Structures are given as structure tokens and as C-alpha cells.
Length: 68
Image (cartoon, rainbow, N blue to C red):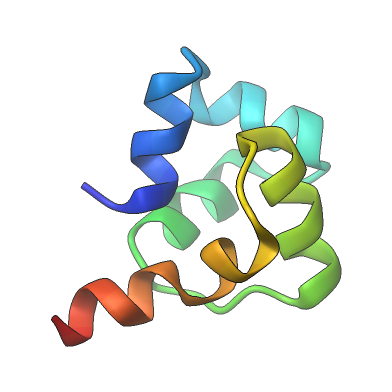
């Protein structure tokens, strides 16, 4: 499970709730959680605020996990 998805689950949020709060689509949240798309800095900041993470965690989480 990705760091983003783990943070979302820990907060008790659905992907739809994260998407709504961050101003993105549910599909985008899903693709970010699976590491299929990159995230622009401004979008990373919004997602990080919703998930109580550092924006760098959003930008680099999947890349780090996939490399490990």
C-alpha cells in the first residue's frame, strides 16, 4: 500500500473525499496512489494538506517505494 493510500485510510477518508477536498478527480487520486501519474507542485501541496503529509511525500512517495 502506498504512503498516500495509507495516510488516507488512517484519516478515515475515501478517495472521493480526498479528491473533493483537493480539487481533483477521484480517478486522479487513484492514479497518484498507484504511482501512475506525476503530480505538479501545486497539486501536491493540496493533496498533502488534505492528507497531513509533506508535499515532498506526495511527489516522491511512489518513486521511492518502487525503487526499494
